[in-house]
Length: 199
View 1 (cartoon, rainbow, N blue to C red):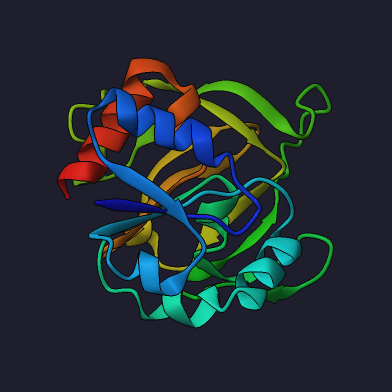
View 2 (cartoon, rainbow, N blue to C red):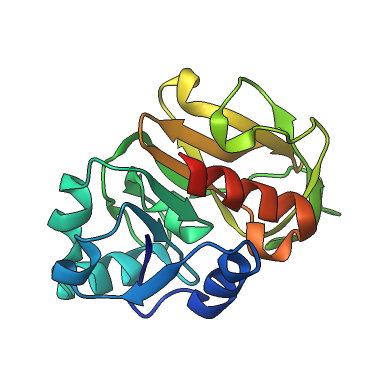
């Protein structure tokens, strides 16, 4: 059973519907006692880093997530929250599950505007069970202005080009994240959710 963390900052129902299409049972909750019964957790996220951390803290979810030792998948902002430090609006602590910081994308080219919205292809750096069956160059749907910068290169699984190389998939042990939205990325995105369900 996969628990989808509800802290008021994610597209919960889109994620739940994607897993429903795969025949995978999920539940949505912000209660730590309920979430503790899950085999795996999804941390979705839409919005700004400090506000999301404040909501997680208010609900008592920060220590719970930091102590979680089973598979966890962060999506979009949820992936960024897995890192140690965020620099959106203000500098502040993240969940510190993966070493590194989150910073504003620096595309360089004035034609490449922020937020980065739309389809972009994956450059796969190293194998991961999360990307099993996903071909290099597969297109995913992104919506973001900030990106994670892992301090340990082996945690970067895939990136995409947007003026610079931007972290698209990260993983450290049981903790993994997708900067893009698998639920908005067609059959290829659903494959990633299916892979996560099998971890």
